[in-house]
Length: 281
Image (cartoon, rainbow, N blue to C red; front, side):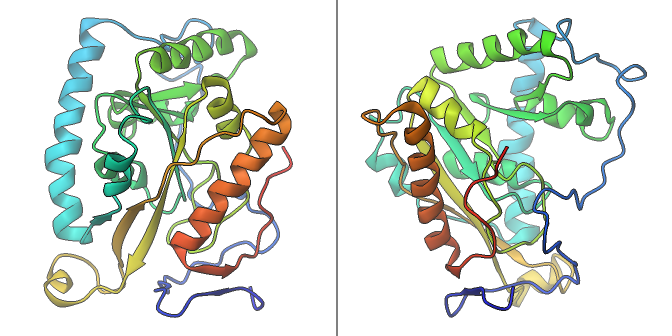
């Protein structure tokens, strides 16, 4: 990290976290999960990846209310959430009409919700999630009904998983993905991106909307609404990045990753980043 730096004025929280220096895929957040055989669902070909039932739709609407009203209020009051860059969504309204893929750095337990706030998508937003998290009682309802679709634990389940995202795209819905894959709380650099997110953007021929989550020092009235060391959050929506379809698929995906990362590095105020741009899957 010694040779890496941010632009002047970037706030870097000191939370006492010892971030790995040689492996960007280490899971720093341990989530208690049940074995699939003992959990509520089996994430194979029997799982309802595309659920059209009344119960699912009702819970989706209820979840949208919780996220859009109750959770939004918590984020504003306790986390000082600020949202910037929505003018980029208005500027490209026509290009985004058929759907998009949002990406962001993965730096807190509810950062996906913050992105949902930023793009004002709740009921029409979906995202792939680690399957075992849905067998955790504390995560299940929120993750599933905010649009979380578990990545199958068997090849047999991939057909249903892919069909679900095909339907979401056909409906013009949006998809959110964390291309870093794992979460490192309050981390201010960018870890390598996995290619799958951008391969999906190529497949559906939709723009990628990069978002960056940055931190601010807790000051003023916000000292009364949260812990002294807990930073305040800002989500910035950046300009959409479009696929260059004149390139062969492999080159187009790599080009897309590099252009998205360039925008995000700029948005995060990164001058020199400690990690490679692309994860060698």
